[in-house]
Image 1 (cartoon, rainbow, N blue to C red):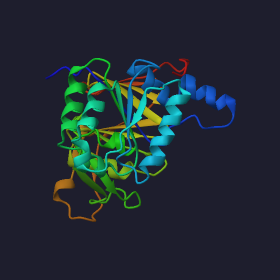
Image 2: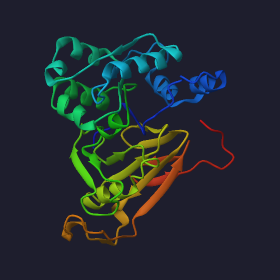
Image 3: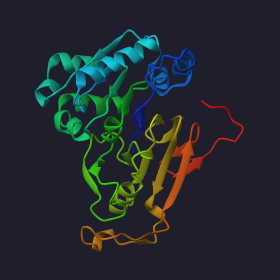
Image 4: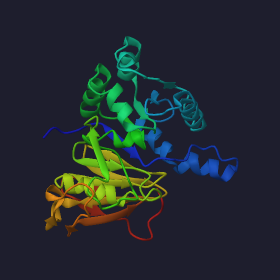
Length: 287
């Protein structure tokens, strides 16, 4: 198994962008926020950051929001790469930006747009190569940008029809971290059921549910540390003793017995390969 050298930072969406008027919140954003961690992992204020708002239906506005957020953190070497087609993804200027970046930041929106417009392109190839081979190279993504990191990507589905076969729709993602299936806005939008079905479909993979303003720093393709203000729910289907997903008709309630669920928060760690949780002591400080 190849040793991954880069860093992934999937984020659950709606992360703090430092736009609160109250100075106290701005200071918290600068010292502790998720984007602070993104900048830190990418090498600090001088990092070359490229924001890709491909998933968004309002890419210009989203790009401007990230420019403002990163500038608040002292970063001035930030570029928005507005890819709206595979043709855009094959441009020499686009490829050069990806080759020279320290950090790529994918915005939220529709994750299928990311794989449709970037998947299989030269940019995709460079992202995978650099992530696998370069220490300090960071790929971050929020909401859709986080979900697209997987190979088996959650593309959508109903939260109201939870635990019914067919509540989740799957699609192929960018394949950066094939061991995981990532869902976002997890608590606020009640997505427990659709992630459960995803794990029932692929019980050898690990389901990750990221709350808003919450993410994970994933090192070496394995070592996960939770950051942000909310929770990460981990679904481990390797312990299932009953799983009737394959024999059910669409729309039928599902049965799953003995699935392992972990609820993790800031500073807690998860080892993907060994499926092992390490939690911080109760008195440990917020990171």
